[in-house]
Every structure is written in C-alpha cells, then in structure tokens.
Image 1 (cartoon, rainbow, N blue to C red):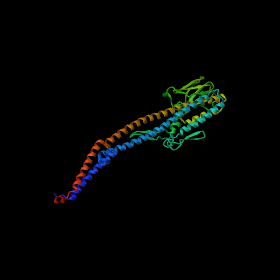
Image 2 (cartoon, rainbow, N blue to C red):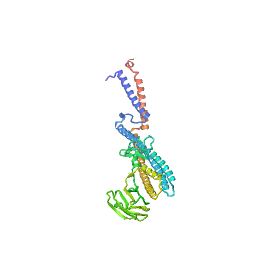
Image 3 (cartoon, one colour):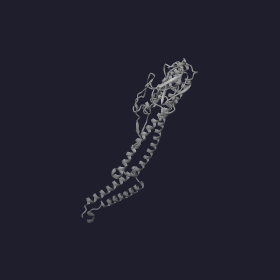
Image 4 (spheres, rainbow, N blue to C red):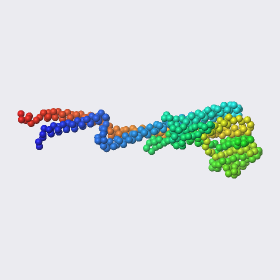
Length: 399
C-alpha cells in the first residue's frame, strides 16, 4: 500500500480537527454546566428533559393562578369582614332606634346614619382587586356589580364563579358572585318570616318565631287573623283553608304546625299577621326598609305597634345577613386553606422536577475537566506529531 504525501497531510489534519471538535464540545459543556446541550448529545435524556421542562412551565402557571386566587380571596374575605363589622354597627343603631325613649328626631338621625352605612356597604360590594377587576361580579369582572337607583340596588353581574386551574385535576373559584353574597339572604328565621297587616288597629306586635318541630312544618304562606276583640283567632293557608284556631292570651305564643309565634300587646278585631315561607331578600332592601321605618312617625298605639313589628323583622333580617356573611366567609377560608395546601404541593413538585432534570442534564465537572485535559493532551500530541511528520519527504531519503 502506497501512502501519498497529500493523503498523509489530509489524514493528520482530519485527526486534529476531530480532536479539536471533541475538545470544543467538552469546553462548551463546562462553560454551560450541562452534559446535554443538544438533543444529539443524548436523545433519550433530551426527551425526558423536555417533558420535565413542560411540567415545570405548567407548575409555574398553576402557581401563578394560585397566587391570583389567593389575592382575590383575601380581598373578598376582608370585604366580608368589613361588611360584618358594618352590619354590627347598624344592628346597634337599630336597637337604639327601637328604644321607646328615643323621639322621632333622633330616629331620623339614626336613619340618616344607616343610609350612609348602606352606601358604604355598596362600596364594599363594588370593591376591585389589584388588576382593577371587580370581586363580586361573577365572570363579568369588568362590570360594576351593584348600581343604585333611588333606594333600590340592582345587581348587574352574573351568577358565575371564575375557576382557576391550580393543578392537573384541581380547580378553585376565586370569587363569589355578588348575588349569592348580598342578594340571596334567607328571610326571617330561614324557615318563615312574619309581618303585620298594614291596616292593623291594635297594639299587638308579632315576633320572629321559632320552629319547634321541623317535621310538622308545611311550607306555605299563612295568615293569622283575629276574629274578634276577645283574642279568638284563625290561621288560614294560601288556599284560604283554616289550619288552626284558638284564643290568644296576652303576651303569649301561638303554636301551629311545629312552630311557635310570640305575640305581645293586644290585637284588635280583624287584625292580621302573616307567616310566609322564607324566600330571599337582599341586604340593601333590608337596610332601606329599616331606615324607612325609623324615618316614619309612630305616634299612635297602632303605628307604634307597626313600627315595633317592622323593627323586629329588620333586626332578625340583619342577624340572618350576619350569619350569611359568616357562612360565605367560612367558604372563603376553606378555599384559602386549599390554596395553601396546593401551593405547598406545587413547590414540592417543582423541586422534584428540577432535581430530575438536573440529574439528566447537568454536568459532572470533575469528570468533564479530566476528560478535557485528556483531549487537550491528545490534541497537543497530534499537533506535535504533525509538525514533525509534515517536514518529511522522499527527498530526505535520497539526500
């Protein structure tokens, strides 16, 4: 086999270029701190690394969603806390206004304060988050949820709750729609609500009532009518069917169908009271009715009785609203607890994914530096050999 001078030079040059490329690759790995810099370095590991990087990106998005939900729910909880404190103040004012020693002027002053507090409550219901989105408007986060028209407050949001993904299979609502929080509050004691007829002429005042046996209660709209001045009464349902009769004793309770209704004072003949199934009432209507009751003069025994009944109903409705806000706030607290657990889990997963990716991708510096030194020595030897070999020719043997 004959080896030409050009072939010898070519082979030596290719060998040095190959060693230079290998050395350059090792130096690049050391500079980046990665064993796998391109898919060609380790195709199998590259696939796993891409899967882990995608999982890390999803993890970061879940964490961002969880942070957003935590921020909005924390603001909602604060709004509910503020609303509860405001209602407590209104309740104190209501008790004060219901005192028989308070005159009409002072009642009107109390009503003015209650109307101001009602405006404050609507501002709480219209609060925004840091992004300028309303907390209580459902999906329509850019729509102001509550708008007043005279003494009426209308809800303009929707009934939805935005669900944020905080895990592969976990979603959490970052708000409560305003209708659920401020509008749909159960009336009365939650089972029924009592009221006095507008034309009553006696001094009887009906209380909120208590359910003594829920199994005997039949939901309906009942009317209690006193048939004479002796206290005889009848109770009829919505079909005008008499479901109870009896004789009232002053300052006692009337019982029927598993419930007990307290009545004080003396009813007149044909005075009526309602015991209606509990529906829902918004807190703004409750507070407007309360302020209106305080603004109206109650001078005669009959109007004083009407006033006392309206105040008792309003106080019971405020208690219902406070309980309702507490229930919603408890739901918010449960969601915040779930978010805390989800964030802890996401952070643990992130550390695990990063560790797995590091094992596949990161470089063993000791091994890489040793390998680089070996490659450098090999390249230097090849270069030294070539510098000697390149000086040889046939003429050196013919000299």
